[in-house]
Image 1: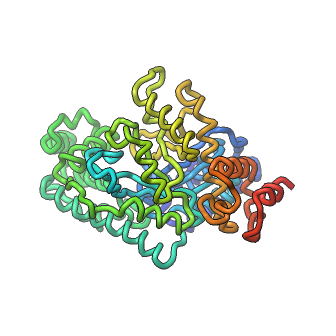
Image 2: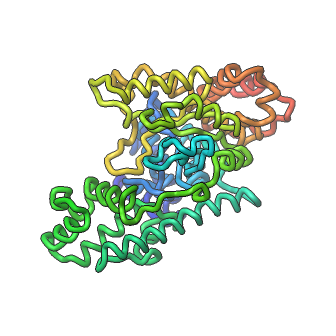
Image 3: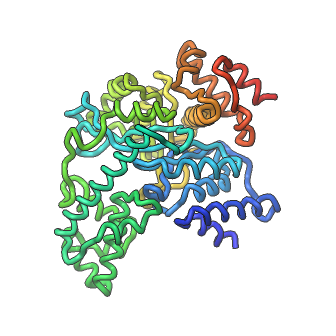
Length: 441
């Protein structure tokens, strides 16, 4: 019964997800389901099925599993949309889970026009985020800007499918009929397209031998060894060889393909979020100049740094990537940048949560928790009274970033989700001590 309910949390029907989550919470109240106390592990960068989650998790499903696994904090991030934000924040509040919501997109950084940053093979292009959005409800110019991000991404996908269809003929997709049904709100990604091709091929080439022959020819490798029809290795190979740089579906982006970093930061700030630089692994020309990149980004408002710990080390080895991870964390601390960490879960095989108990990550966990507490506190204060980390109230009340971080960390650590509403109603004259006093009474 419980497993069946949990599976229904991934329904594309929002009303059903809400009812199922309420039913699971009732089972917690009656003692049928035991929930552990929050621990020290976290994941505040998890994609949901509103862009692509490799396990099909809805916002409610991720909130439920995060609570069930005893995470200290959890957060969702989706490409080009905030569709998950309100559902996730409401589900987290119901569950008593500290939570935040964000959005990720790609941007153009003019100052790095000749250097690859973190989008492989694409000089000047970088993945970029806004974190700690107070909600997903945008209006006016903000709504229009976000819609342009989404619409542009969908047009890129349609154009890509058109190119790939020609190469894979007789296999072909109809974007509206074959791809969009894999998403709950029409925001498909390249990974949805890969799944759609895999499933359509299975229908077209009946029998494992014909299917393997087709994909082996098109991919230039022994497809049978990848695991057909849609295993992790096969889907990753399909995306890499057909859709990424060098593949028939790929087109090199130009300076007008994506909004600038400054434009996206302006959007995030106006929407009440913290603009956030993302870091891959420190091996590219651009990321080897990370301090320069952070300086450029800070001038447009970026005030946090995202890293994905799990892909930056191998257990038991002190390799280049691990050294780069330690170096970028040290740089973030030097610049007083809160760190945003998570496993993403938008690619097959990615973990639910990082292995923070490993020798490689355990020493970094306090810094990661500090960043998450700051983002959580910002999210709540921005939602309840407009006192965000990057707003006028913070500028007026803190002498420097170090003092600001200390306050937001303390608030995020101390505040319990059940008391978030108590922070509503503070006037603009409220002092940081007044807020801490409120939640400590």
